[in-house]
Length: 360
Image (cartoon, rainbow, N blue to C red; front, top):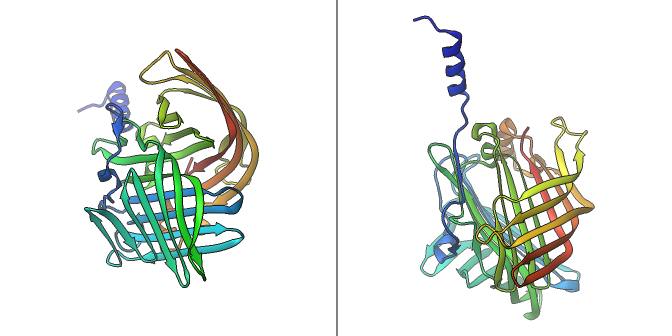
């Protein structure tokens, strides 16, 4: 059979066609305890993470994370780590565990991971950690309701391999701790968190992703964007929420984001570009009469970090074959206006902005 130029072009276009992406479908959903369960998927690319932060003002801060991964040797490995800094005292922990060294149960929900544990339900999460003479127990309860962007998932390709997102925009944090002495009670602070999992390694899904979070009083502004790899058509996937107290004021998936200041990392071989300042404008996905616009402006660069440098040797050996990951982290000023029927609100403050580049 003779292959004509037209047939050749058609065959090339079919071979190069991008895999489909299905992002955040269905209606707004309520977060349930089942959304806290670890998924324990098979495959080298599977990863899952629980991350929670708290701020106690001038006294200090708290960080807690549990990470499950198949990357490298062994499946369902766990890393439990965290830090409590209070009144210039610091308690840190970090433990790497094989799949038979940590446990999980559904009813009641609880993960026990070496020095740390996570338990409870979306309406009340309890985190504990122990190390030597140090110990803590903190409770996170929602101010803004836990949230999932519609069904919470991006599905990649014909096999519909999923990445799943559950967000805790704003929480009240209470608890007690001891550092070598008696138990002490902390006055309530504010916190936030997330639970994410994926069947694909991040460098298989995304060329880059960015996120911004601003909290001032009981107002929150959170956005996240993903730039898919060429396998998935280099699609941009975006979502944004604005909350006040326990009310969700805005949820948007198709807002416009316009960079106003772009940094090119001339020191990196990939010459990554980072939108350091930008504008956003859009409408609520359910009520087009609710409009928002705002500006995020670079205040200072907190860190520029090669993410391979923090990996253990086995994971690094795998990751560097496929990815050249960099993190750019900023403190950024934000000013945001939300207008709608009977509503005219201003949000402003200093937030945390992060840009991850995984590959070109």
